[in-house]
Image 1 (cartoon, rainbow, N blue to C red):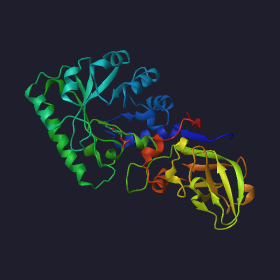
Image 2 (cartoon, rainbow, N blue to C red; image 1 turned 45 degrees about the vertical axis):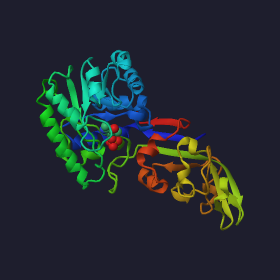
Image 3 (spheres, rainbow, N blue to C red; image 1 turned 60 degrees about the vertical axis):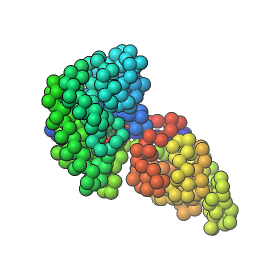
Image 4 (spheres, rainbow, N blue to C red; image 1 turned 120 degrees about the horizontal axis):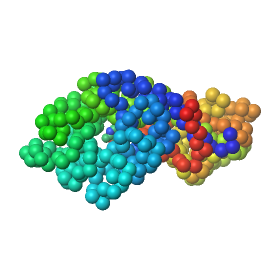
Amino acid sequence: MIRAELRIDLAAIVANYRTLAARAVAAQCAAMLKADAYGLGMAAVAPVLAGAGCKVFFVATPEEGRALRTVLREAEIYVMTGYQVELREVYRAYRLRPVLNTLAEIEAWRDGPAAVYVDTGMNRLGLEAAEIEALLSDRGKIRFEVAILMSHLACADELDHPMNKRQLARFREITDRLKSLPALKTAALSLANSAGIFLGPDYHFDLVRPGIALYGGNPFADRPNPMANVVEVHGRILQIRAVAAGECVGYGATFTAARPSRIAIVDVGYADGYLRAFSNKGSALIAGQRVPVAGRISMDFLALDVTDIAPGQAEVGTAVNLLGGGLSLDEAAVASGLSCYELLTLLGRRYNRVYLNG
Ligand SMILES: *Cc1c(COP(=O)(O)O)cnc(C)c1O
């Protein structure tokens, strides 16, 4: 290894897709590819998901949709940030389908199938109650085929959260009424993200939309992670320093050696997404042994206290495992106070990216 490496296991993504699709066996399983496939690289991830049978993909922006269209010629691509007429040419040229979030967007769209998003209590995007009534009272308002009628769960990662049942009931009530409109007769209903899939068949409807679980993130807030690990980050030791008791390490001098110490400087920093939140809190694995981060994370470097590692096992050039492998995303999330969504989408562009099992 010549520099820090980000390893992405494409076979693990396929395995996770199959696990999720099998859990929601009566529904179609789409995939979320927003934010460049949660930071893992849409251009590499999308083809393997398509190869595993995925036909419907969601991205956040028209730019992401355009990038995805150059990778997948056939897929249905939905763009979640809605529609305005200025974007008409982009949607048309790249055969993108908008997820329409407001009445104004529904009135502006007339270029083929689209998704309609209804709010069921999260109050992020989606039609409000009054807008739904407006659609029901003017039955000609929708002048296109609604291919997907969707909403989103706010608390699905907590299986017993009362919001889940409340949103489910609201979704049923709204979709029952909207299905009476001619444009919505054949719409696929969709409510579940990764965590929603684990809430059980009541939540699956016609289409599920997992993201984080495909990429090895834990769909549960408070249970062990059932998904296969996808991402590993490995840094490289650039220098080993002998630090006397009482000496400090790094910016702000936030680490003071309590004993004569050996400190390893590693080529990963906050510019690689290993944020300062890990300062004096993160850990790494060297030859299977756990070592703590010493002091603040710098832009390009971090320091590890390797005093307890046998000298031959931590030398210039030794690889250190910072994420994945024996260091789960969950553990890194607890140490840093970041979510596994943030840990993945923060992964920097500077790593030597290696796609395994493609
Ligand atoms: C991000 C997102 C998903 C996927 O959520 P995960 O928790 O990553 O599975 C599904 N639906 C919508 C609307 C989203 O924004």
